[in-house]
Length: 270
Image (tube, rainbow, N blue to C red; front, side, top):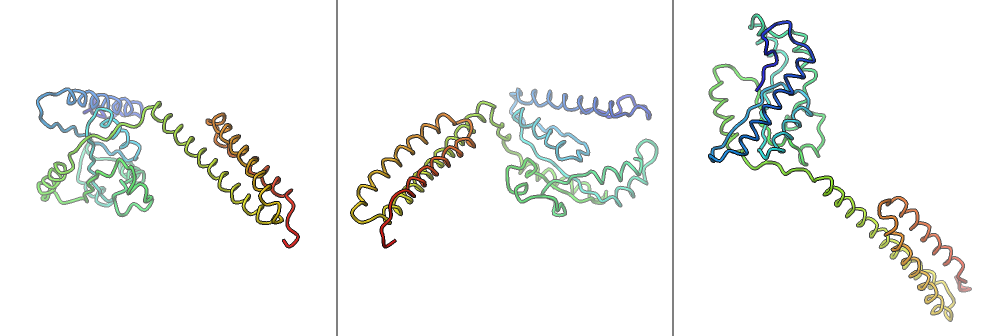
């Protein structure tokens, strides 16, 4: 898609040139993806982005680019030890030979995909959750005489892995709706908890009262309980954007009912 050193000069490389080249590559990839989306021939099209992509965030950028243009995404991870890299690099000459310190630095920075068994810094959520790197084929370094066989295996895997594009993430409006629904559900759960706890407390308080006053006490406490529940439901609407404040309000209502129950006279045999 783009050359890191388009001028061909050995001294032209710089972080700025690298960033500009990377930006150019992604811009060309986006253009090709858009052309592919508008293609009416019905033919499947494959766009290959070949780079070290040592950071997971770099690979995520490729995934997002494909997803945003309605394209499926898969990645091929070519695993090569530092020793093999150095041995192969030593056989190169001229500008094709990479400085050894650059090889060592790249090897130290490499963040393998979660599918690699040796990647110990991977959580179970990354392996089984909503992970963009699930569709990854990892291959170990092979001899040159096995290149054709490896290529056939890659094409076979790619044909099987070909599928639909990943779903687009929720829009800001959709995220707000999801958050609002979540807060409403949590608030309703808090009110339900207040209902259950005050009901239990009412029953325990009435059971401790003298036999002759239990009916009256139950009626008074239940009336007070209903008022507190009504107030909590009213507060829920007023504090729907601040669940923490609503929790504090409900705790205050719970405490009020506990204090009310504590003032009820108990039976002499309690």
